[in-house]
Length: 205
Ligand SMILES: Cc1cc2nc3c(=O)[nH]c(=O)nc-3n(C[C@H](O)[C@H](O)[C@H](O)COP(=O)(O)O)c2cc1C
Image (cartoon, rainbow, N blue to C red; front, side, top):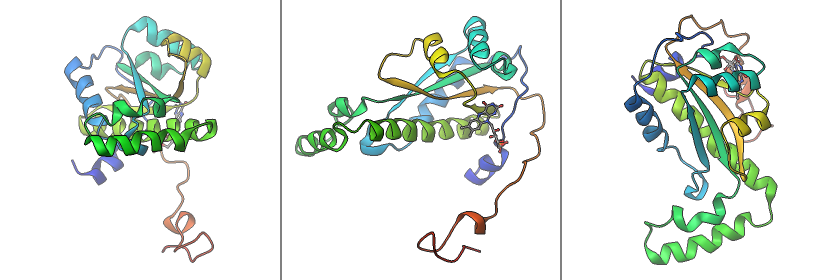
């Protein structure tokens, strides 16, 4: 499957076969490939809770005001973003040559120091990129997915025992889809969203 095919095939699917079980090796592969996602300074802010237990999914479903695809999907990935990733930069640069590591680690610390907004932006940015990777890999493997933010973040964090310093970014349902995607409600065109050089430039047509 090409990237274009995966982008076209991935759609938000909201009905799943509740009896279908995704093999553990597939779930591991989803995460292995997701880890190829880029992140600022290689800080890999993403963390994942892979909810497969019916009881956990049920509680997540309640935290999402009863959106039943959470209950029915084989796997619900709760994607978290690490606000404190920069503090562990040495870990994420451990394989770099020593002189590179010694230069980069303090530089990264300085870049983020005392900037909570940047830390939060980065956590959400990286985790969101990872979420998209995960959906595309799942699509390639024939699974249906749905990204979700319609949930009570504090409740979801509590259910999956998210450590402090991490924030819930998104949930992704994964499973065997049972329905066709809904028609897209109104897509923008290239010329509505892309402009040459600056946002005051001509639209890209
Ligand atoms: C960040 C994000 C949050 C979303 N939250 C929900 C949600 O809580 N529940 C839901 O059913 N769909 C949710 N969706 C799915 C969108 O409704 C869907 O992606 C959008 O309508 C476009 O359709 P498509 O994904 O099939 O292209 C979300 C999508 C994104 C990207």
